[in-house]
Image (tube, rainbow, N blue to C red; front, side, top):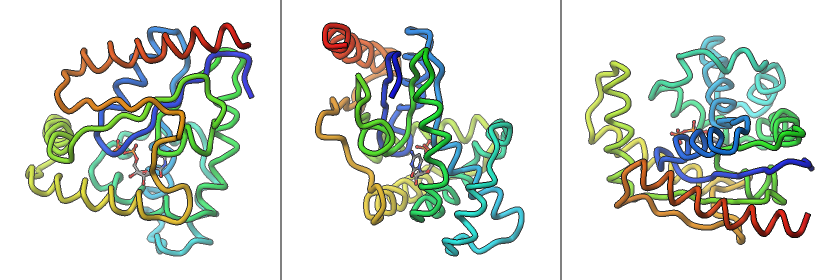
Length: 217
Ligand code: CDP
């Protein structure tokens, strides 16, 4: 799909995949797409128009209307937007409407890093490097809670843990592109790691994959 190095970083909510993807992008000088923002934007757009998030047709139409500049909206980073995203992400029409945008990003001549839930399984199955980043729900909830508090949100750790469990169940249980590691993804459990350690480990995994990719391409 692309002549450049494509890195797929998947994993559940608050596993550290966004930070890892950004670090890999900086290290290899590759553009980075946080694909969660696409789903967040669809959810936020629908909520603003007071549309029914469970209506697959309306959700698909909202996804088809999405433009790149809408991804910069700070409202996409909130706890509420994460919940809206996981609700619209169950619709095949939404996932289909967002395919072209993700393929175009992954197909850039420079190569690219994409983070999400289905990058290594659906969006770029031939990515040169695939990581699946995990951590226990409790550790992920602690990280996300700290992040939300820093953003000024009034939320308890228990609420965030409940959100994470709901999202894991919804993302893993949906019929279309259920969250799971690609067969050839390398699992990176960051439970016991600092973010620096996780970023180092991710770089080592990508270096090994990149060496294989260079010799075969
Ligand atoms: O940062 P966090 O992992 O909490 O959320 P995110 O990556 O922004 O994703 C928000 C929601 O969008 C997820 O819970 C998924 O339901 C959905 N999503 C998806 O289905 N596929 C992707 N490639 C990215 C996100």
